Image (cartoon, rainbow, N blue to C red; front, side, top):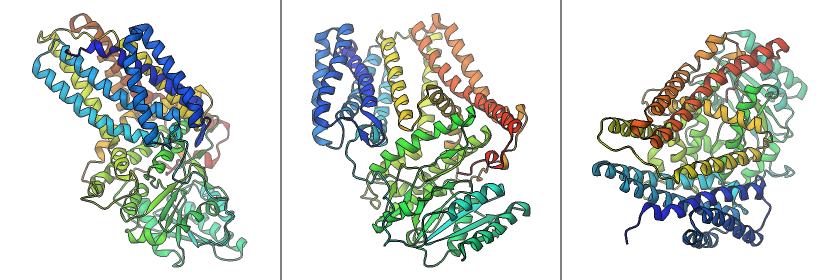
Length: 631
């Protein structure tokens, strides 16, 4: 008996419905990070309820007898997964099972549709080969997502989830706090120094390095403030250095301070110039270093002074899901990496691996690769221990994300040998190698998928218009699957924002607009990271200087052009729907229009930042509210 694509329709529909039901179940089950409401035993009832709802829905559309086989397969795989993965909740098992079963069924269903389509045999071979190659990569991405979503699916944890109370008084190694700055507003840095001086820890020094600032009015007040804080303390805690010229940008300043620090300082802490540290920053995190295998401890990027600004609010909530959800899961699977400010590192290890990389745009995360390759581990704690400032303009925001995206690609190009299997490279903790490769490759993966999709749409449209193939007919099930997939995405996105503390739908929408506005710069940065030439450290303008509206919008001119072109192509496909096939034309037009809208979010965010800065200037600007983040 030959298997037809239509035979798998009930299977694919059951998977789509189960994915939506499981997402709702997880959202109900997990109200906060590392907190799951139900045990494994009570979760079994939820599992049968979820399966029943999905079976009922698919049965009403495709028939109840046709829906039984996928139900049985799902329960069988879920049972095996629950025995093999005791750390997962029952709802987490359901999500994991449906994701991987969905990959298998989706691939087989798509291949059968291609085989049955009225296209040439060579084209069928090409498409099926592409789908199969993509399937292998999607499985790897599924493993990465499994790790990143650990907060949503796990009930037990192998790695620490909270910082110690700080009551351990017998372990108090000396900490050298490094504060690099360049042309910063003095009042911002002085307050950062004040917060450090107020830390609830008695054994530390602070090294402030102003590198390459030409205007003495910016760095002289910091030198004076260091003396003032020392006088208040009754002994020297702060040491100030003004060094010019000093190559290497932030990494160069940090390497300079490694040579100046006290020889008995066992730990190095990095605090950015605009970050206000919490009093327990050192007292709570230092105890982790009693374990000699721990080489660094990282805490989340977090921000302040964004309330009341729609632009800054959007940026803030765009940051949070990664910092408060994804990074916790990566940590659970051994992939915790440093992200710069508000982190602690073991001095001996940091120096042994060669210090900070001045060639990399993300010197902070790069050093953690070498540290783990040397046999050490890191910890990521989800609790906030300091808050900085969000870039004041959209151009600054783009530059920041360019660094954050191009830097990991540079790391992959430089260190790819470290990520080879253990037979050819040194071992690293947990899933470090897989997670690092996929994280660094992420922008290139998005670019490959985008280019492949556009080429496919163009080739099919051209072949149909030239009479080389009949118009494509899409299965009717596609129009059921699309809204189900959209609903599942919305539920999962809503839940991730909820876990970060975001409660308002409007704030979530602003966060998604901010995320979409970065679509182009992420692609651009991914390609730039492949370059063998050194990339300039694109520093943001100081003091958040405002520009005219046209200059502000110019920062997003590429995205604006791409958005307009995308809408034009979508309209053209719709106009040609009778020639190339209405269903294919409508689906392709929807895809292009969605991509175009994502690009057009960039000029919208640029305009929003211009408007909000104007309102802030009219209200009563404060120096600390105008400075751009250097994170």
